[in-house]
Length: 200
Image (cartoon, rainbow, N blue to C red; front, side, top):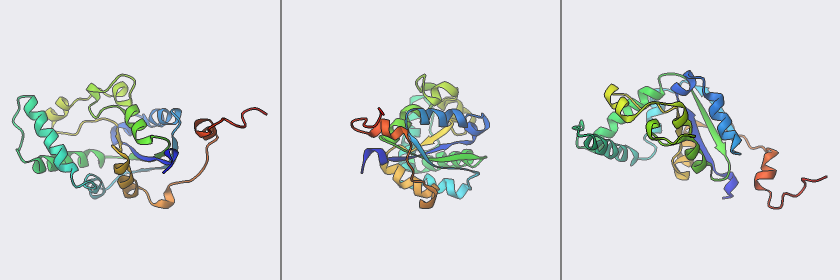
């Protein structure tokens, strides 16, 4: 596959919509040179969100292991030692969070789009996200606050974690007809080898 054809899924979560950050988030992704090829605003059904977090059968176990480790690092007793059970609890709070209101679901295309978006968005926990990232600049939430309140971390955005993940997630949120194929003038600057045609 050509680098410039790589695609990724980005979802502006309910907190991002409610804080009027849609334009800011889209602007940051556009400015780096990515192309928006699909977008819709919906209130997702709980079943649809739950299915999203079940696309990768290993994800629940991994997130459960990570949560157990996090509890222990803080000197707290995890709700269970079984990663699958803890993973189910994590998914429950994520479903409640994502399905709580309108979200903006987007498909972006461009060279290294998955990695570029992850870099711009920042780490999952806003507290430890770098300054200059979306989460680092616009959110003050932390795992500690979320655990105390027994809720999901409010971190504005979902972004696919790998090319494989993006390839599985995109068809879950978009039909093929909803993803547009078109050319942007800026692609001549970003991808043309010799920059032919700049001078008249």
